[in-house]
Length: 128
Image 1: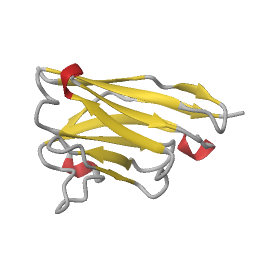
Image 2: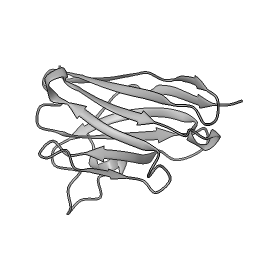
Image 3: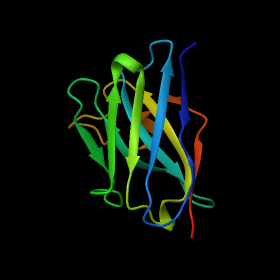
């Protein structure tokens, strides 16, 4: 059964960095686009970034542009989210998601309803 599993979360001080990983099994990342979402307590889940399977083109939410970098390594069945300049507002549970051709010019790519496969999430806490 195809699955996604996140790792790399933790507690970091403001201004610090974290690198999240999303490992896919069952071939789920072979041809699917990948996205990272986050959900803070009491807030709706929001799209952070996505990356296409075809050419590695990426999209970012305005709140993370210039600070976060999404990447993927198909040979490792993995995707990553490098998070720099972390702020307390970045706190939340981070999820990776995958689906076919979602992160494309004619799609938003950062809306949760676009994705059918999800991981369990990893907690990221930014606090002094």
